Image 1 (tube, one colour):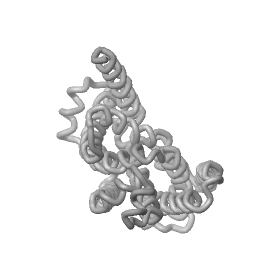
Image 2 (cartoon, helix red, strand yellow):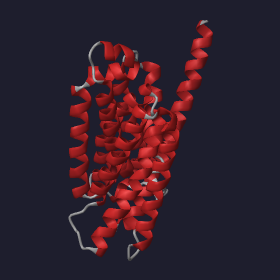
Image 3 (cartoon, one colour):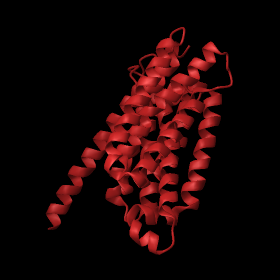
Amino acid sequence: MIIRFMERAPVSEFFIDLQQHTFLQYALLTGFLASIACGVIGSYVVTRRITYIAGGIAHSVLAGLGAARYCQVVFHWGWFHPLYGAVMAALVSALIIGLVSIYAREREDTVIGAVWAIGMAIGILFIYKTPGYNENLMSYLFGNILMVSADDLWLIAGLDSLIIVIGVLFYNQLLAVCFDEEFARLRGIRVEFYYLLLLCLTALTVVLLVSVVGIVLVIALMTLPVAVAGVFAKRLWQMMVFSAVFTVMFTTAGLAFSYGPDIPAGATTIVIAGMAYLLTFIVHRIITKSRS
């Protein structure tokens, strides 16, 4: 059904068709919702410098997606949505990596790599053993925002609300943990607890972004808008706001420019974000040198 609509069209026609086709409206709304969480949690991730941990969590999500789809088909668990499995896998991975980071730092890189590889391997095995062609799971791997359904949208909205509420509610504690752990401990902040909380929020954000750009490109969308926002922002909350706005712009542009040529929207979004980052970096360097 979607293929029929994906005719070659200029960018302007995307916005015209947006008023008529529900799947385009769902896609745009998904990008908007994911952008808010991405702006908030992505800023924490970049500031705390745990992008590599987020990468391990992102790729382990495939295990949950594959297991959920397997249970749907083999055991007829129609209620077990793939995103439920993704949430479970992401949270378990986040806790494993977080606990190892706290109590056995010398083995942190090894555990991240193990979680990354094992999660992907388990997911591939479940996909292989699930009868039929699992097109939906492939869309999660490489991203297909146009496949988002109404049920997906409600789940994404729920996760988004949870992430924003917790991320904003504990803003000061997470800010202290990101910038200076020792100072946070002296102030009586439970650093280990809030570090694990941050990893769990990162896991939920990863699940949101998987629906937009897929597992392979999720880290790029979590970091590139934040990197661009960092040039303009002087405070963490400003970085969150700017990066959320930039992510909305990138996802919308990705949808619009990929609509006519019928190319992957997720990959197009990342290319646009990457070009914006490079352009911002170059211009910023030129301005900085001219002032010195």
